[in-house]
Length: 189
Image (tube, rainbow, N blue to C red; front, side, top):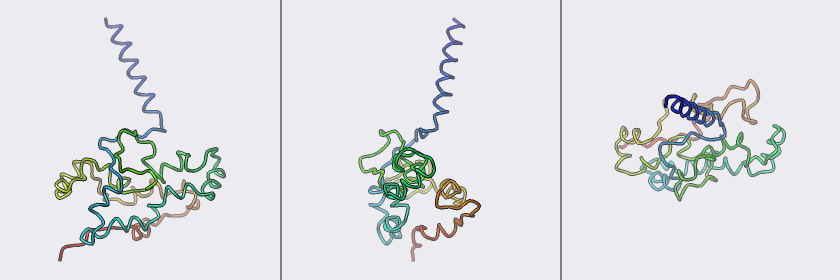
């Protein structure tokens, strides 16, 4: 009996280690992704600071589309990749970070072509998207909303020396980047 239990534990441990070592898969998120179209329904008004249009006019919104260009393919090839940029995990991890999320976690309005979208930075929104949850900041955070206190640490996961647009030794000015995309909710008067 002990022998069978030992073998079972060993097999389970090996399976978990193999799964953990597969760096091409994203850890299964706790919450589902709803997509920018869903988020934008409430975040497009003046009262909400026109956050949707700020995103739409940012480079984040076109990050995936950038990978579909000849220039991106040229860069991917120069970096030694044999696949087009739009199929290369090393490119997708920053240009469309949800590219390898289990499809069952993606809602009907989620579109990978939206690139670096709301949920890339703020967490999968299926459980905090409702107004009743969003009105209570603590409840929204408990339901998956991510709010960043340390932008530099978060932003440099992509805006770093691995990016072909950042030269070796160049310091990334996160504050300047943030100034281009910040989207606060205006204070009530």
